[in-house]
Length: 137
Length: 137
Length: 137
Length: 137
Image 1 (cartoon, rainbow over the protein chains, first blue to last red):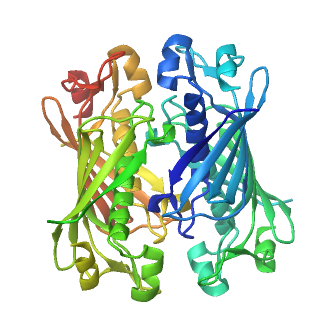
Image 2: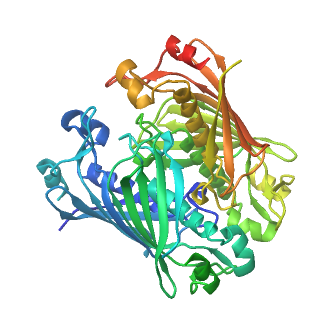
């Protein structure tokens, strides 16, 4: 069975738009925070530490796919449940479900790659490091 | 041939993350701005006007699918090219391509629905209004 | 003695800028969330409810003054301590201190006014309602 | 006479809050963008370049003071007029005025310091570099 984590989010007034509901890109921000929280809960150092020993600057996005089920608004307490669904050679897919209580608010899949950013060079995907895959499986 | 619009974005320092590149949810924010800009360029009033005559509060997202091709950073001038790809009974799909010069930075498809939000009631999708579909096709 | 509240914030990756530290406008966002949290903790309904009975849409800012003492970064757990420092006829001053553990990260004073926004009219400050001042003192 | 620059901002839907007006921390984001734009218009390289030759990571905020005069909303085109009001030994004050046409929307003063961030060390203010002060005066 794969590891999964829960990340808590309290929706702020400033997260909401003129329609009075969460401005949807914030769900991506929260899934991103939950993605990092997942890795740190599995024992992976924060990116600012990892970059020093491995050159890895984080896990930039290759692709996202999000489905919005119910609106949320300020004052709501949300939970983001996160796990890794697939590990591939150079990418992995994280699955996030955002709940308000037992109701699904939205759901997303992120395809990410571990990347290095050599001085003066381009952002570059590298194979998923074995030690990270082991810590997170 | 379908209408298409271009929306200009200047990437700000505050749009970028500790990796020095655009924090990806901002691309969704800019596609959303380009979505509204598309409708207004086609002659549809801004949501704050439309709500008074039709009850329509905007076009909340049902689903998004975004593919990130190249990073961008502060100081970059981006163009978002937007069109409607499909009109369905209750939803429509907008297609956005974000360019830096002639290079594709990212690309997304948004499924949206025109919604009303009755006082005290729930956000509710309505059929795509004919006059809007005509103005935008 | 005046009432005071504490609002918890977990700093996300997306709250930080290319220097790796919290992008400073986010402190204003968190003080704003703590401002609303203060009122709700004192028994004032959220703005979306209050507008129905009183026309009050919230407490827009007249002026802010913020002093940044120490940087914070993603993964940090912050506490915002909030109280009302002064009640005037049409405005009030809220004082916010953002702590990381026992270290002051930043501190701000916000001058706010309760406002109504009549249909078709302009945003307008009104005298601080007595029932709110009583609930919050 | 001191140099001054103008930075254009198009207000997006996602910049606005449930009251339908610009969520105020965004004005700080735009002043920050205009601050950097000022330096680059004066010939200072972007921070990501400057850090390589000088160690300077940017100009973090020491203090901000902002006065909000009129609300703005999505679709508005704003101009931020920026100049340096005072140069001190270790800090400087930038003055920003945000206009919508000829109407002042908000106005702010930012006290900033040029900072270095030594590997493993703390963010540290340095004296304002002479070459920058000369380029910007």
